[in-house]
Image (tube, rainbow, N blue to C red; front, top):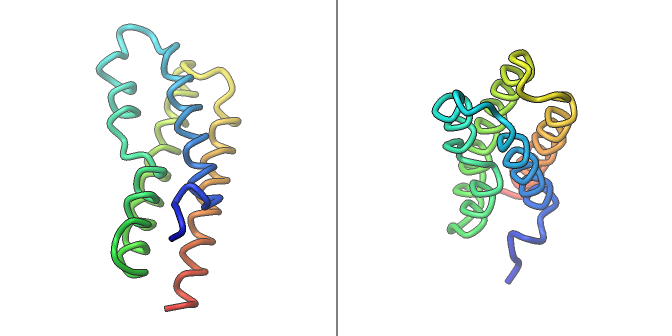
Length: 116
């Protein structure tokens, strides 16, 4: 049986989660219940990918890949806002990771649709 850890999309998504956590550690204390909660409460794409992979069949996996795509769009907006507020010094690096994971998730979805 294949494992979700073998998927490039999951591997890149988990690296993105690590980056987000390291970036939010430096957020100001007054943002503890603002952007940081939004970041932390975000259903990270890696979790969506692994959950969908464990479900029964391609349709469910596609559903969870769609949720992962939505989470990535939300994360992109939060990174943009954090950059504009000066909480992240180089938001383009984090946005580059978001774009990379988005492309991998979309590519995986396209590949699965071709097989269904």
